Length: 70
Image (cartoon, rainbow, N blue to C red; front, side):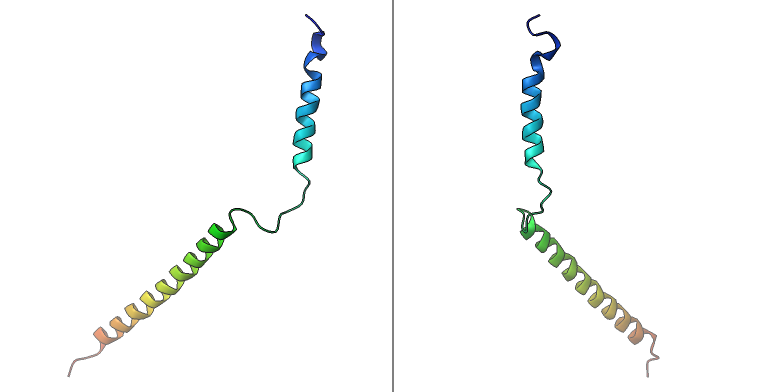
């Protein structure tokens, strides 16, 4: 056994140094997912508007059906 237990130590130090250098704790202002996130938010807003319209339509139909016919 050449080097014994400490033979892998330099490689471990390099790996830990690279991993530690990658995370500076700063948040980027934009990410590659920003456009997808915005599209998802817009889709959710649109879905909400559609559901509200469906609810108003449903209520209107029910109020017409409840009226006595002449």
